[in-house]
Length: 308
Image (tube, rainbow, N blue to C red; front, top):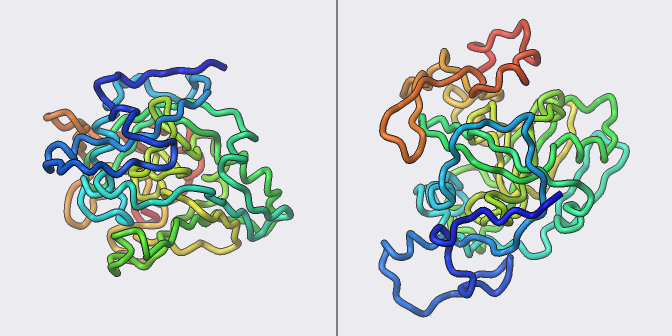
């Protein structure tokens, strides 16, 4: 393995603005909104990883500025810039992840200790959102199936449920009943075991920024972006299909599976075209977001319009 320092100096905030990987110095300078919007709140710690070529796309990646300043993370606000502006509200020190449910080996582990168990890889994945925009991001992490195997699932484990942080005191979005907090998501067990599904802890060679779901998040690149739950605190293996936040909130718009599918329109817009952030022209949406050869076999015989 080797270490990559691949962020351009012009694309990140000066490291003198940070105490360490977890805490951001609060500046006393009265920044204008334009200046503040250019603060990326990037973590300063480099990650050691190897590049993955089997699953990575060869498409041009988005810039670190685009990736960290245009986000959906309702815990930090509903606007696309809000997660960046409120990033310091997310407290990530001593983060614990619990693994439980239909398993032989339940455990709670500190995220820093978890990272010592698995070799990190960089995978360049597309992330496609239902609002018909997308990004190409160099995620750093490890396969979700490694955690699942560590827990030794029982025969009753048919699904994997995920739960995000609940911190109404500090997270501005959770002070309002925008959603039924905490945020929840789920996958079928075979989807969770697919090597394309990863747990991400970083991007662009650095520790994951708060606005992108620090310190640990899911990335499921063949599904719409809201399935890739951020700031995870619990993974639970269960027998029945778990509750998922957006599916519960608006079931006619957001299905449990939410595979990227150009043939299934959102009730309020078509999904046949998408716009890559930073580009003007739209492009055709690909089935399973372009990852069909890795995942289509899991849905053989299924009606993907009914099971959307």
